[in-house]
Image (cartoon, rainbow, N blue to C red):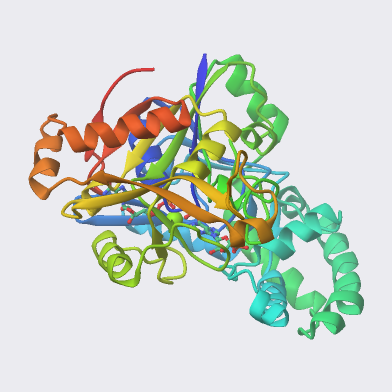
Length: 425
Ligand code: GDP
Ligand code: IMO
Ligand code: MG
């Protein structure tokens, strides 16, 4: 029995949705283990574009799909996503939700907005989906969980306690509306009706998967550089996208060998605020943004574009214990004659050995670039026929050398089958 874990190695939007969709053909259960509807995972099937925020991408292939305990679940988003998939003819019958997953309410979104506004110039640039405030409640042991939706009396009691806590503490401090207990209970019960039958006991679900030796594919959202502990704090999300959290965020312990597949674009993007050392000059950035469609799948915000940062990638590959890397979006760089690749950061005249822990150092650090030969549109056409030109080969070798990890697939198009297998691990 072996499991695969797909993780983003950069600042998100590496193409995880596309890769999970591709790899899930061999999986029996696909599991989201953190984050919430801040994620936007795109799958292109011919003329169909499917963007998933909460539901694991394996649902598109009809796989058993679990929203794990580590995820924060916005019921409105979830119901909308289920309805949308069903309208598209994609069955959601096999979607399950851990009873330990926390519920994200509208007031979490209000708190997110208020907190961002109060931070002013120092705001994080969140997706305003309420992620941070919902995790705050979880760690404050004040949260309401999916399992609480199963019993009206328990839910009533939990809501009563929460509302009293919120209205006397958070509402006046954040200057947000007080919650009406009755309205909240009624609305939550209505929504609960629609998803109740999908809620599962975490232990029972995990034990069955292990007993039946099911092939599991974990789907990370966001990415390592946005991890609450290891990312570019405070400009991060409030969960643990790194591979090792897949077990804690699902209740499925590694009673199996696991293979970590790190995803990186051939360049880098970042959306929201925070340092981005390899940001391109405006002209190149605009070109790449337009060609790459670098606009957020969740918020529509334009993503900043930068050169591939191998120093960050080395850190991220190490942290995630990646044993293979997949490079996406090679096609977007076609025609750029000379590519820059960052191989390290210099700080006050010295090369840094480890990725900076301090945001101050990171903001001051300067990327050290190496210039390499680019590739052409023709090379991409050839790549799709299995012929790899020298420039792309050298690019792959450089990534392998700097990260000490083998590149197993490359992608040069958004479609499900726009992917080329280089080797087996
Ligand atoms: P995720 O959040 O990591 O799942 O990535 P997103 O879906 O937010 O953003 C990735 C975007 O790139 C999506 O629009 C994908 O359809 C697209 N994409 C993925 N791989 C490739 C590729 O190799 N080439 C091109 N041109 N687009 C790709
Ligand atoms: P996927 O799964 C890219 C960023 C936000 C912001 C920071 C904190 O599609 O790769 P949050 O709303 O989580 O509190 O925002 O994290 N962010 C993402 N950036 N892709 C994502 O998800 C992201 N999810 C959050 O822009 O900088
Ligand atoms: Mg995305």
